[in-house]
Amino acid sequence: MNYFVRKLGFYAVALWAALTINFLIPRLLPGNPVDILLAKLQQRGGIVTPDTRKAYELLLGGDSSDPLPVQYWNYLINIFRGDLGISVGYFPTPVTEVIGSSLPWTIVLVGLATVIGAALGVLLGAFVGWKPGTWLDSLVPATTLLAAVPYFWLALILVYVLATSLRLFPSQGGYDVVLDPGLNWQFISSAVEYGFLPALTIVIASIGGWLLGMRNMMVSTLSEDYVLTAQAKGLSQGRILRGYAARNAVLPSVAGFAISLGFVVSGSIVTEQVFSYPGIGGKLLSAVTNNDYALMQGIFLFITLAVLGANLVVDLFYGIIDPRTRARS
Image (cartoon, rainbow, N blue to C red; front, side, top):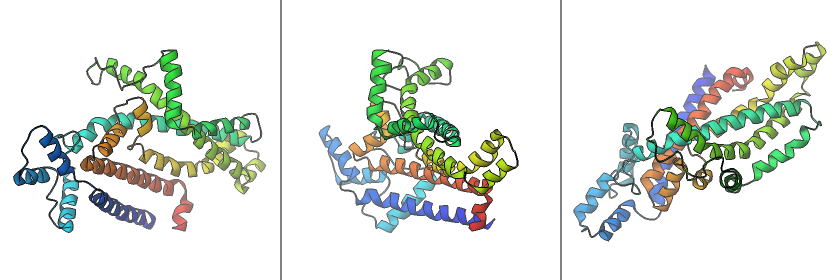
């Protein structure tokens, strides 16, 4: 019980630190979102007055002339109310709506691709590591080479081969624009078709790392005493592989999977840009380009919560599947 209490306390402190850093970073950057909006208003022929500036400051989440502790307190209150402010780049749309419109696309695409890549990599790594030195082991360098290839380069190759040359899949977009988004088979099948190439890019680029990590852990685990004891007892090779070798070798991959799953929210920015996919990556790039501090702050908050939440769940789960962790804590 003390193990779980300590973990919850640690992540509570980490969450507070992340919220504080998320509050400070945009205020240390050059520029002011209010000035950007006022400049756009002047370009359209609007008249800027002190009252206009005051109204825009309140609209974007507070008065910048307030002392920093007051701004920080208002920021925390707004966070727990679910108010992340107004986006400058998508003015006057609230940040929560901007993120809410793109986050499901990234979670489905990058989430499924991450799970598939990790599952395939771990399974292949277990079989390759179970019999090191075979012809399967010689294929490992090819998969690690793919992991070293930049996302955008691999994405462009897949677009050229599968979309432009063979015309098997669409090259850009998230779905057929003539369709109305909804939970119907026509729209879902269109989204799957448009999302296949981005997902394939992520799977191909990530599977090598999972495979190599699991393969190395399997080779190391095979020399452990409990594996040798299981072999001496005459247990079947399949039972030793599943119940002794792979079960212990997969533990580091579980921790790595938590980090990867947490970063699903941030998406794969480069891949989404190459395919013009309507995910959170495009919104983050737009926020940086337009100095949209409120949107950047909101996206960073969601990324932070996802990473901390995923790591907390896996840490608690890790303590259940590996009692040695609780004993050392």
